[in-house]
Image: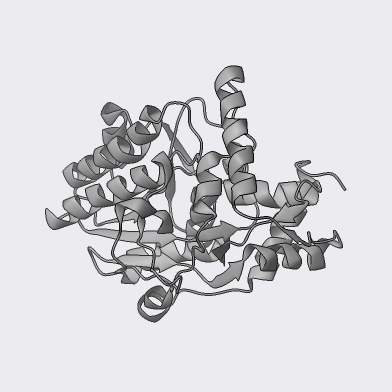
Length: 328
């Protein structure tokens, strides 16, 4: 039996499907209030609980061999960061303790490249690039960094933990959507008249899901693996979306201070209205740097697949249109 936390989310839903494709028995820990559209029609066992509630984790772990801890609060802009840290850091502590008490055979902890270091010259970073406090922009990155430290501590105590650091997954089932998914939606709705000089490492979300399973099967305990593929500037991503959709790619490159100022104004409005800002200030601050990464360790040691990113973008576009996130 495999347990997936966060199975209703983007990565978790694909991990669930990848496990089912291998005819594995899957149990999902699901909050009572969570949208379950990503699990509809799937042969999975649902256990209602929450990673922040230790009492709900013991029954979820019963009879489990492998835990895929995908649950996380992924928001770049939060009025109060405490719930985010409660989910990402305290929740990880709770899952690791429950897994240890249940004597599971393997735990795969879903971290993020946001928890990794950044190179001074902008070259692709690795799992071993030192982390500077200045690179942990915003509460989400800080919480994922702290959660990764929790996973490492439990590994040092003897719990068989493998850490995976997905880069920027793209594809279908991005229900919230994630910040990257929202960027695709904004492009489809012609809300991106300009761009900034930044970059991301993109990977097919299906490859990320397979990478989780490979990490459980082949990963070295205590090791980290970047699940990534193609380093692309934002302009290259928008040009790829343009080729797929026929929507013109923006030609105007904005200096960094313009979106920064717009985000600051948007943040001020958000504090007054209580609505989430359309331009997350933390996201703009992150965009000052190219988030390029080197996934060669995962390719070499796990056999991570690197499927064409354009195909994943095409599936994302089709899914967002089919589910009415975008017009046309």
